[in-house]
Amino acid sequence: MILEIHTMFSFFKKKSPAPEAQSVPAPLPQPAQAPDAGVSTASSAAQPEIASQAPTPPSGAATAPATRQGWLDRLKAGLRKTGSSITTVFTGTRIDDELYEELVTALLMADTGVKATEHLLQDLKRRVKETKATDPSQVKTLLADAITDLLQPLQKPLSIGDHHPTVIMVAGVNGAGKTTSIGKLTKHLADEGLSVLLAAADTFRAAAKEQLAVWADRNTVEIVSQQGGDPAAVSFDAVTAGRARGRDVVLVDTAGRLPTQTHLMEELKKIKRVVQKADGTAPHEVLLVIDGNTGQNALAQVRAFDDTLGLTGLIVTKLDGTAKGGVLCAIAREKPIPVYFIGVGEKLEDLETFNAREFAQALLS
Image (cartoon, rainbow, N blue to C red; front, side):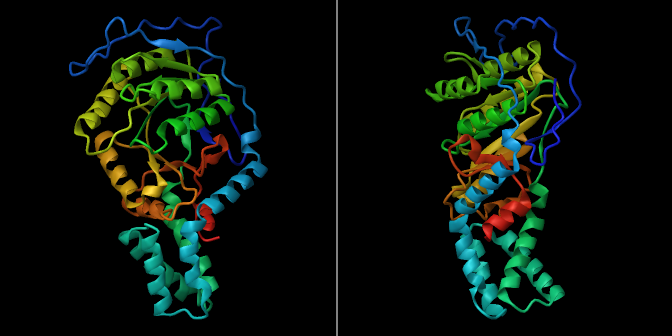
């Protein structure tokens, strides 16, 4: 049963409770083959391996204000390299064309992008004129307001509970931190009292299943996998199993790939089609994990994966120590897909919900 969480920093937007599960859980389905003419089905030898653990009870500690403050401190530290190049613009004594020119350069160097930089400059000049600001420090505050307003459309909670289970498909390029982010997301879901089933559909990379299994064991959740199985078939089995066992969430880990790898991008489409056959409304969320260090390349990835899959949300990782944190402004201006989570490190607590005001203030702190 899904609980209503009323704390200030709840990770997810909960919907009405689903019907309570039967006292005796339904048996897991037999391994199914992907019902798609274009899908290579798994052989009978590739049986799904299902490791079952009891879900972790909600802790409540993850939403404590003190914990959030600690996270904000880590975010400020992570964005210091990006922010320092911008805030030095406001150390002078005059508001003039030179200040604005230096600001444009600093924003572009932070990978804010041309369109977002032009938007922020025009908005900032308007705010300076309306407030009759006379000191560069005031301009810095007004810039934080402008960035907040630009990023506001990206701030949206991940909704869990409209569907049972909620099927979340996760994609990303190699090295973006996709599987690690899935592990952290699983932890947050479990802490909210939600039961999670993981699908190890990244059969392309040898160690992917083992890596995901470590996260499943660490979070005491179930995982469905096949040795050398077809990714679409694994996804189909996981969604079917999630429905049979009354799980709240099914997280599908897909193989990392570059947008230029056409055959692998086609495989993502196939996984999505097969998931839809397992559950006519799924996937309910299609998330892309992007590395905040890649700057404008991250924006290119968002465009490519959105064209292929129709993204519903983003997870931005590795914002610790990056000089390219302004890429979120570029995304907001050119491809405003919600950013559900941002990460500033490898620890579980280093992944948090995105807040536009917090990010803008941390960027210019």
